[in-house]
Each structure stands twice: as C-alpha cells, then as structure tokens.
Image (cartoon, rainbow over all chains, first blue to last red; front, side, top):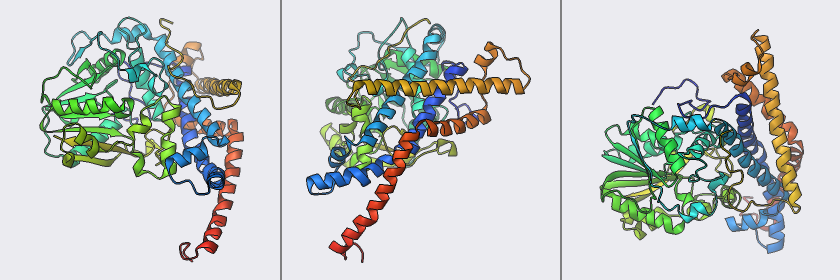
Length: 390
Length: 121
C-alpha cells in the first residue's frame, strides 16, 4: 500500500472528507477526550470497585464479588462509574457530531467523488435488500442512521462519517489506513495457515473496506470481494478502494444469505462483525460460510476477547458497550466458543481455532493502554480471532 | 449545507443521573469544553501565522493544516486542559485511589489473621 511518512494522521485518500481548521480542532478534541478518559479517568473505576463497591457488595451479600454479573451488581450504581459512563457516552456522541459537520458541508463533492467512471473493481447494489432487524432496531455504536440510512440520492455520507470516526474512535491506533484489524488477521493466517493460497476472498460486513484492502496486498493472486447490508458504506468503500488503487468487488448483501455459488471462496473473513449481528444471525452466517467455502478453506472472525479469558472486573469494563453504546449483541457475542458454533453449523469442531494475535500496527504512535475496556478500542494491543477450516 | 444528517442514534439513550436535566447539562458542558478547545486552536493558528509572517486572513486560518510538531504541542495542551476541566473527577479519583490502597493492607491483615497459611505467612 501507499507508503506514508506520517503514522500519526489518517491518510488523506481521494474521498476522505476534508476538515477545515475548526472542524479538525473539534475532532482532535474528541480524540484527546477519549484518550484522557481511557488513560486518566477510567483507571479510577478499579479503585472505586476495590475501595468502595466491592466492600459494599461483600457486606450486603455475605460474599465477595466473583463473576462479571457480581461486578456489575456492585458497580452499576457507583457514582464514579456512573459519571465516567456519562462522560464516555458523551465522547461517543460528540465524535459523531464532529465528523458529521464536514460531511454535511461537503456532501455534494463527496457524492460526486463517489461516481467512478472506469473502476478497477465493481459495485453492485440491491435496493430491495431487507436491512436485518438487528441493524434497524438501534443505530449500532450510536452512529446516527447506522450503516444503511440514505439521506440523499446516491448517498455515501455515512460511509464518509464512519471512515473518519473509526480513526478517532481508535485514537489513531489502527494506523493511517484504519487497517490494523485486517493486517493483524492476515498475520495470524500467514502464521497458522501458511499454505493457504486463496483464489477468492470474501470480507463479510466490510463497511468502508478499511479491513478489506489489506487482503489485496497480502494475497495478490486472489480476487477480493466485500459485502455489507448498507448502501452508503459500500458506495464509499468502492470510491475509497479505487482512490487507493485496489481492486475489490463490493456488493450489497446480507452475510446470512448471499448469491455467490457453493465453494466460491477459499477464505472468508470478518472484522468486528460478529458482535453487530445476533445469536440467530451469527449461526446463519456460519452456515452460509460453510456453503461458500471450498474444501480446505478457512473462515476467520476478528473481535475483542471473550469474557471467559478475562478477570471478572475486566470483563465488566469491556461489557460497557452492551448497555451504553448501542451494542445489544456485544455481551452475548463475547461468550461464543469457536468449536461450539462450528459444531452447530456444519463444520468439524476439531478444525475450529481461537487465538490472540498482537496488533500489526505496533508503532510507538499507537499509545496503547494495554487494557481491554469500554471506550478504549484497540487499546489492548491484540485482537482475538476465531474460526474454522472446512 | 447541502444535506442534514440524523442527529440522534436510534435506540433509547441511557440516563446516568436521577434528574434528566443533569444529563443535558453535562452534555452541554462537555460540548462547551470542546468549543473552547476549538477557539484555542484557532488562536494558536493565528499566532503561528503571525510568527511566520504570513497573511492572517479567515481563508488562511480555515485552510491551516497543523504539522506533526504543532499537533503534538496541541495534544499536550489539551491533556493539561482536560486535567483542568475535569479537576473534580480527578480529585475524586485521587481520593478513591487512597481509600482503595488503605483497604488493601487491611484486607491482607484480615486474611492473615483468619488464614495465615493462605495469606502466605
């Protein structure tokens, strides 16, 4: 990919909304606020727990808090935790506002930039596609309108909003191309499936393609496809991929049921998709992956760690998003076991895997807190991957 | 402005305080803190343009792109600024850290007298 000298800013590709100096300052403030909350304020929650909430719990229940549910019961009314939560929620809402303003101002130019005369890749939209209920019910992670709402004809506004917001949300820790989850998943695949030579790769729930594009470089002989339910993010993903000189075939499809042929893919990937689906949808997605994979093919999902791998307090803090950031499936999705779901969906559970892979973007610039916690996305310095080989 | 995007994310907004007005006042206070930081960066831009002997026009200010050194200097300023704005939170955090630390040796002492072997005595 394009070599960048500056690892501390988002790469300005052709469709990235341009912020004027005040708009940029507002976004930088949100980034600083998020970093301050994660590194300076969130730490007080542990002291509130150990010094105040846990002793109260022990006194009331006659035993010390042990599980994540215990910690929640102890902490949910703690005044420090509640105030931190309120600050955290506001930082999220302020982030969306700060990226919406320049997108609103440049909407006409962005829409025009989305129309590509002679593309390398392709874009196939389906206006008849039913948006799944788990995306219609709430706007995930508080992004007004979600991935699918269109505010004008040929609209890509929420793609532009999302691309910029991902950078601010992760406080730049996913690199200039927001590509860390894709790069990290690839590193895991190269280490664990060195002989995998995919003819075709599918990225499910690709949004703006920030995790999709790394596969073009990592597997130059493969055709790369990306699907999502949201038309605005796909229009933007297409324009972004073209601006960055990569060939990807985007189409508007639900990963639970696609129109690709049986065995069409050798590698199916997703990046922080799982927690934005539902119990039923996730199983349908895995059955569809089983249908779409050729023998020997691999499906892999990248996420934040399952709660069973974390101490109860850390699991509680990571679970913040379930109730505070419009992520209704966040909690339940963190209970998934790869072998269990593989067995339910037609795969051989013996070929299932789970693992941790250190973040590929491990520059000093990442300023990681080394903690998995709500409001500190990418702070942990590793991604959890799970999947199965067919 | 050619399009107006949706302002509120669909889904019930959690309330964090007994009086919903407090949720609103906190949101407004944080937004004001943000707008003050925006103004401060604009002042900083004007000062830097003046120092460099460049024309100080609204167009020049709006188009100003801070380089890495300027961005880092502003990051440092905002970190101090947030420490000032959120002073009351940090006061409480300091107090909580003290009482958590006070409790730790006491819990260890309790464990010690109740079960010296498990406590490593």
